Length: 294
Length: 235
Image (cartoon, rainbow over all chains, first blue to last red):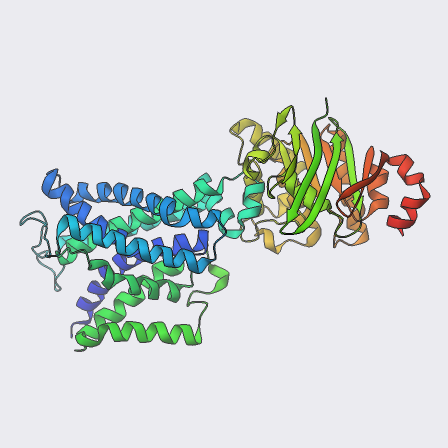
């Protein structure tokens, strides 16, 4: 087993997982609910990226921001349709969770109707796939791009949440919606911004995941949905830095379990980790003191 | 014209009628105190005015506008700002971030800068601790921060809900000196207090609330002189 090679694989896959899980964490921290339609938005992001490349004839790089914008829009629609009506009625969180499952099924079914169930691929030549030369390990340009895009987006998110006015409002609403409203913050707007950001992150993760594996189906969200949950449980629910760390941990676990010959059991490894964390450290691996809630 | 006028306010929690026709006024620059026992409906009145509770009947006018049924953020943005009971500072954010959140509805950057400077002049302790998490402050400092944060909104009327609650006697005096200095600035204040003695010393006018209704009102000094009030609320 080439350790360096596995570390490289874990790092770029971790970037995708972190990006995806950040959307879960954002919504959980601001609204206190799990948005189980997040993985469906991820899948839509991948399809939008694909359509942008095949129909609009733009490069895969330009397709990433396009997918982010549209997926962010889907996020807002999700809030307006699946969450806001329940919030207005003060429905319990479990109702919102179930509503998000319904939205996920609907989004997957619509994708099936439009795109069919056969796996689709980015056109030949649109992704530079030859490994970089002169390195002792195999690294493709796309892996580097994935990591760079993921890290840049995470840095932008951190900046947005900590430094900007919108981010301050998000943190205030996350802490206490009632107090935030007495400060003049319109929590409805904050929720929509949060869903837009979560959707955009899922969209970016979807395109990157699609590029990495070059297989896009309406069901591709299933494989990341529960891993994303593992990531945020690992990082401490709603903890942004925790989601980033957790993404890399889960990816490393998965990559190394494949490397030691357990590729059939890689999901088992990940979910055993989830189980152990829930049992022994339900507050997550990242300490409470260091947390930044959005 | 009164700055704030509440007419025949009714609020219910389910089947329980918390307010049953409360009416009162606050004139510009005036300090008005609502006094009454626990559960009389003082906080309910403030929260209904702030738009946090559904008003079943009645009307609230502020600054010539009917604000009944407005969302809380809109009420605050209109210059009617509440400092809720128990301070409610945003504990995981810094002192500076909390103060800046107070100015959230404002768009005049220069004015906000000036007011921030004023806030730090008024509360030197907050300046020393501006980069600390607000949750690490003492109770008295948190109350200063909560009031300072509300002032950052440049309110026309400040509603204070039990500002002295849970504070040591020395700090209670400090809080009332602070309220007096805000009054001197010309900002109207609606003050809800358990400490009726201190509240009446500071207020221009006062209303006594009992089981969701105003049972007595008058100039603070005359209520102060009223033996019945003294025995019922001043212990």
